Length: 324
Image (cartoon, rainbow, N blue to C red; front, side, top):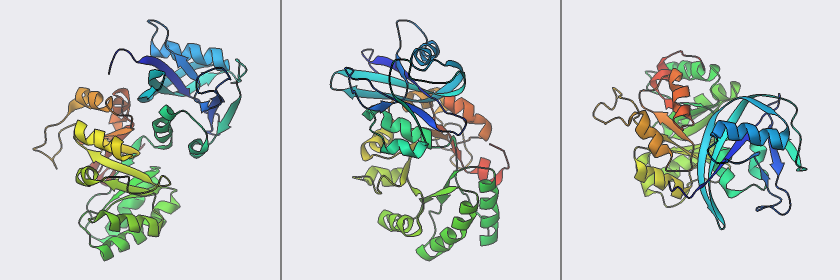
């Protein structure tokens, strides 16, 4: 990205109930009256972590103890181009209040979608609402085995699961969905369908059964002219290169899986990206990006350090028994 971008940091601050703090921009400022995540410009040569500590101390009167990256967004406003680096504040001291006279509010993550916020915050809101782990269902020998494995995944506390059923006919897919829904519901988990062609048929099943959304293959993504479902649903996509990532952003998906990061037995001929290349490609789009390919749950922190939302995978979740 160009050096002309203004570097800005923002913090996602939560209270004990998990609600998120937002503040209202004061009159006289650009984007006055909009709600935003607290933060501000990086001064001179100060580090991003130092800028986050300073800004939240000045604006809210709190001391940031620990934080970790959430997402970086590049956005051009009519009068400015910003590089917004957003961090999850994982521990802080003090009681936040509007030290500069700004209004503040505590809101649930889903409520963020209904607040008037700057355009640059749209992918940030998605990143906040998405989990760090994105399990994908794999092969199974019988309906009973499918149910047992899905129950095992859901019971481990993963709130968003991709129901991958590319080779099923419509009737078999309906039976799988009907089996999966009560299992996921009992664990308060949501299901995204990665179903068979044609895409409109899969979208209809999502709406009929009240699934959380759909996950597009790279081929479906490259053929899509518009977002296939409304904003009340999640739309994810699989990507393998920068062209597919750019297409995902143009179509308006909510997040992507980028693969393969590491070598995998299932795609032995595919050249792995490696973590440095993964990081470079993540930086080209304003989307939460999961690392996929040869992942284990322990790789989640590494994915986050390289700009990712977290990790996705089949083997580590479907066959393994690793905890969050």
